[in-house]
Length: 300
Image 1 (cartoon, rainbow, N blue to C red):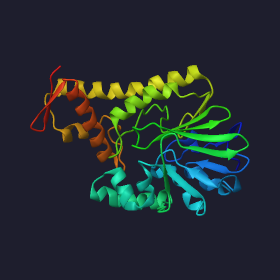
Image 2: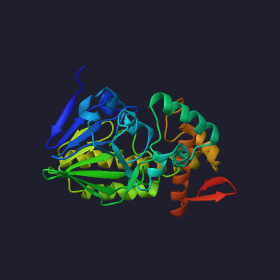
Image 3: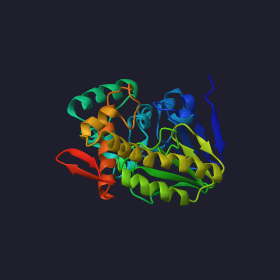
C-alpha cells in the first residue's frame, strides 16, 4: 500500500497512520547531493524501503519511544540526538532517567517499548549542540535550534533551501503540549512557544497530527491554540482548589488535568503527577497557591 507523502524541495514527508497520531509519527527524509538524512524514525519507518534504509545519517529532534521505532532498521547509519537527550538513546539506564517514572512503571515501560516500538539502545549515538549545522551537498543543509520543554534537548530542525522547519513535538495538537517526564519543563515550553514564532520558516512540519503547514497565518493560529492549553490547565487546577479547598498532589493527580478520566496507560499517573506539580510551582511563584504541609491552598 502506498504511504501518503508530501514533497517540498529536498524534503519528503511520509505520513504515519492518522496523520502521524501517537503512537505513530510522520517520517521526514532530506536528500542532498552527498547524503540522505532521516529526521526521527517513527513507526511508519517500518513500512518504508530504501527511501529510508539508504539513509546515511539519522538526526533526532528529541528522544522518546515513538521517535526511535525504526532505528533498528538502520544499524549502520550514523545517529545523532540533542546533547541533553543523547544519554536516553545510548542506554536503558539513560532512558529511565529521561522518563523519571517509578521503578514499577519503568519496568513495564521497558517491556512496552521493546515490544511496540522495537526499542534498541544505540550506545554509539552522538550528541549535537544548539546551532549544529550539517551540509548535505548541492546547497542542502540542516540546522538545529534548541527548543526545550517537551524534553530538555528538544530541537527544531531547519532545512535549506526552502526554510522548512521540522518542529517535532511542538505538534500543534488539540491535546496540547506534553511536559510530563523528568527532563520536561513547563517553563521552558512556555519560552519555546514564544521563540518558535520567530523561526525563519515558510513551511512547518510536525511529528504528529497536523503534518505540514504551508501558511504562516495558519501556523500562528494553531500555535496560539496549542499554547492556550497551558493556561487552561493551570486555571483548571486553580478552579478545582477554589471549589474543593486544599488538596494534596495525589488528590489532584487522581482528579486528572492532563489525561481524561478513565484513560489508562503505563506512564499516565507519573506523567500527570509531574505535570500537575509543575503547575503548582507556577501558581506558587505567582503568589496564587501556598503549600501547607503537602496541602495546596488557593490564595487568589
